[in-house]
Length: 431
Image 1: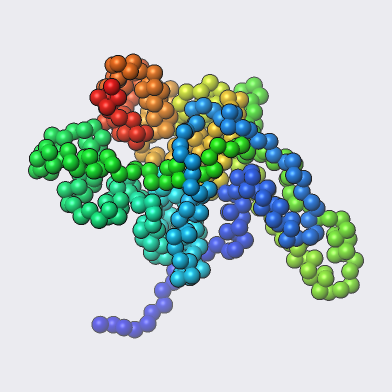
Image 2: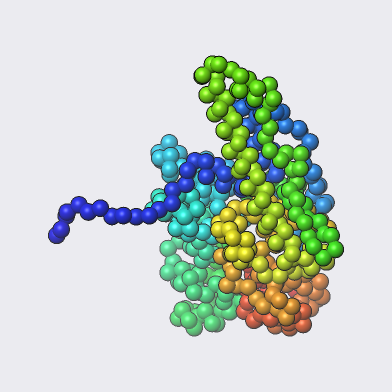
C-alpha cells in the first residue's frame, strides 16, 4: 500500500467576509435593511443620522387576496429562532455554527431544504462535508421532518422520531405516495403484497404525519407589510423602484469629513480612514442590492404583466431562467427574491410568488397561452374546488377537463398530486 504524501491542487472559491456581508445585505428585506442601517449608525459616529420615515407600509388588507393564508399564531419569527436554540452551539466550531445558520435560513416555508450541500457550499464557501454533517444534526431537531430534501424523507424522519421501524410503511412512503393521495388501496396492496386492511392501516398512519413541519410555527403573524419593490405601469412598460427612496446611501457628516482631512494626529486619521472605508463599502453593497432587486423586479413585472394587472395564474418563470437573462448566478436571484414583497397595481404579493421554484422547474406545465407555473396551476385548482357544488364535488378528471378548457394541459395524476400537496381531499372526502 502506497502511503507517500502527495500535493493535490484544488481550485475552490472562498468568499471573503466582505463578500458574505454583501450577500447578507442583498438578502435583507426593506425593514431589515432599515434596522441594519440604524445599528450601523450607532456603531459609526461619522454617519449622518438616518430619517425614521423612509418606507411605506401596507396593512394586511392590502395583500393580494390570492396570497392570504390563515395559519395558527407562530411560535418564532424565523426558522433560525425555532431550530438553533435546540443545538448546543458551544459544542461546535465557528464554521459549523455558520453552517447551522445558513441551513436554517435556506429552509423553505414547509421546512424542507431545497438546496444540496454542494449548492450551499458553492454559495457560502463552507465545505460540503461540514454542511452534510450539520444537516444530519438538524434533521434530528423538532419539529420532526425538518431539513428533509423531499416529502418522502420528511415523512420518514417523522416515523423515525416516533420509533416506528416498519418496512411496509417505508416502502409505501418511498414508492407509493401518489397512490396514498389517490386512496388507491388495491394498487398499493398488489404492489406490496400486503392485504387491503394492512394497507389501509399504513395509509392512516401516513396521513397522520405532517408534510409541512414548519407550517404555522414561524413568522410574524398578522402585521403591517413593508413592500420592498414598488412596480408601476406606464403604457406598455413597467418600472421598478425600491421602497426606500429616503435611504439611498450612508452619508458622512461634514464635520468629521473635514476633521479627517485636517487632523495631524495619525491615529485619529487612521480611525477616520477605517470608518470612511466602511461607509464606502456599505454604500457599494446597498447600491448593488438596489440594482439587483430593481432588475429582477422589472423582469418579473414584464413576464407577469397580465397576472399583476388582471389576476389569475402567473406564467412560468424560473429563477434559473431569470438569472440567465440578467447575467446573475441563480443563488443570487434566490437570495434576492426570498422574503421580499412587491406592491403593484393589483395590491401586494410576495416577490417569490412571481417565480416557479428552481428546484421544481421540471414540474412546469404548458398552456396554450405560453405556460403556467406549478404554483399558478395549484391556485387554479384551489379556485375550482372553492367554487364547486358542495353537494357534487369535482372529480380529478373533471378538474383536468376544466383546466384544459382554460388552456392548462396536465394529467389526472398531476392534478391529484397538486391537490394533495395543498391539503385538499379527494372528491369523496369533500362531500
